[in-house]
Length: 640
Image (tube, rainbow, N blue to C red; front, side):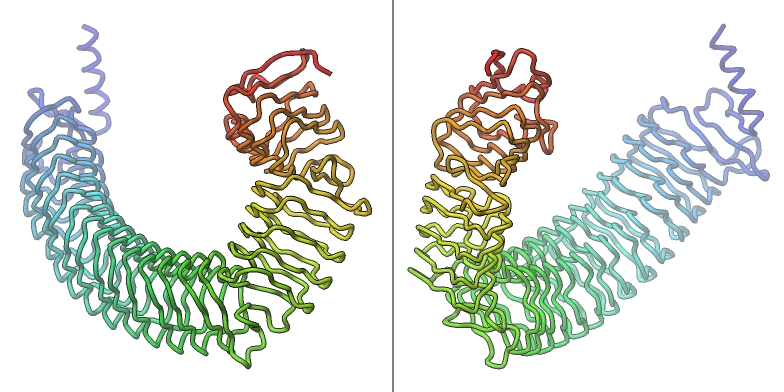
């Protein structure tokens, strides 16, 4: 009885809205508008084949309304009658088991997401009467294997066929002049695609992640290739850009890992940011004389590039433009170049030499960082911004030492003119055994002597002011360092991973820093900054300390126990990373300290690499330790 009343109530509601359910138990619902019937709904539990009638209550059926069959998951086949002229937004969206649909010649438009996620559709024929296809109309129809776009279509809209992973063939008519963003993105089944000559622009991400695409011929009228247009087309081996192309967008061919050959036309002037990044099979590329700018990361991680010749038209080389090109052995920088940006050739581990022309007015930081086989750099005689001496790169007046060749051996005496040792200047100079710093040096840059694994000692001049972060990272043979009174700035983890360092001594006259038992603190001992890596046994952090700095005890693999003073309220990231022998950590304070980049604490950054059997010892009235240090055993003891 209740069910009968519910059905009657629903019918009255439909009537009030101008919607009437069809007779004899039909699953369809219609709405009458202007003497025409529109299909507006279907019972979502209906299963099997469905034939939509051509008339309802004597009125012609002319449209399939918005969401009419949305999520009708058991529907397998639909026949749409002649006379229907539009299929609205999401009309058949998520009809997961829909295998077949017959669309009559009367249909002219298909709305946004009309067949979205119809995964069981294997084929679909659109009549030539269709002149409009909406965005995402066939998106995620992963069962579609082929498709013919009708001749009346002028635009393939945004995401129209995105993630149609089974699609192997598509016919695009000459009437199409443009395509929307992500139009075919994720169509992994494509091996080749032919675009009509009418196309003028390859839109942003149009073929993004078409990982099976091996070949594509671009029409002669194409003027622009959008951002990420062919991103992660992993099987694309070769691409020829027609002479009409004037613009290549950011990351257009990024991650095309099989790409071996590219032909660039003389119509382009810029190789854009990350255009060919991670094209690891790209062996050579002819850069035309029209190019004036090679932007940031343009050829980053192109591991197969062995040599690059830049034409005389190039004026700027962007940040990391050729960074991490592992097999790049030579590069010719023309006299036209005025700017070489930061890290332009960083990580080119097989680069043996480089010449910086006189035209260069600006050289960025770390240009040749991690170029471990670099034997020397030369400059033009008339260069005012850069100078070389025995293959060592300086700024124009030799006040800044920019790069020392990593392959040099033995001892080196830095010239008296130098005031600054630039970041990574001596990085990876594994054969350098000693270096003399003149009294003129006031600044040592970030990672300046990183991984100088044969460097046995360093004597800082009396006038030095600043020692940069990680400046002596991994200098394995250093055993002791003395910080002069003049130093006012020491960066994070300046002596990290110096595995034989036992002692850091600070001149008593220093007004910024101090040391206790070989450990580096600020002057007032409120912050512990660096414990030498070889420190062993037990160490007690004074009660005056409030902060344990990031990496301060990192890599102290010989430290067995630690007492943390009652004043500590903050522990920096990676503070005790890889303290692999640490067995006991005693907190004198009653409140658990704040952890930078908490919430994981001991399960996160601060104590990564501390043995799982290490114990946390806290006082009886301590608070907050259980939630922060749950990975390690907590022992309650009334220790003072």
